[in-house]
Length: 197
Image 1 (cartoon, rainbow, N blue to C red):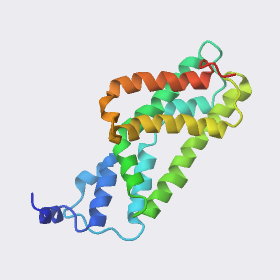
Image 2: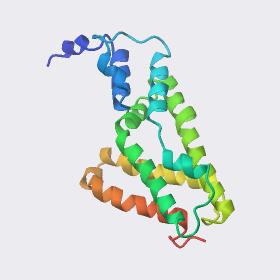
Image 3: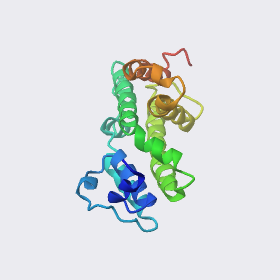
């Protein structure tokens, strides 16, 4: 199609970015917008991203575990594995949106600020709080800094779910093999079955 055809769908580059980022986070309202999509005002795209993130950010296993006492030695492994799987599946599902925001951060600093300062940091803090609680309870091995441990967990999963598909040799690894390998490895690191004391 010709370059001008895009203007039948979006009035400007800003409008196109707004549509792309909202679609990548599965905002259901994009299907009912009038076309061409108008140029969003200042701050509107960041508001849309925040709304999308609030709608998409469902981590019931993490939330429940963070507010519940330890399930005990026989079930802590299942709890950790479920939380790691939940985080990985979210990252895999929304990888295009995460990558789009990351790649566009320089052009859209207000969007990057909403994503990284409000959403991403908050998510890592939630994981750190969960890890700290389980460490205090003795359910998982104590680490020097739960925030560093949480950052490791989230970034390891993020690289494999979000960044790997765009790396030079990443596509050679199948999604199924990556998920089946990375999730138990990260869970083992949390549980201390990786040899850490």
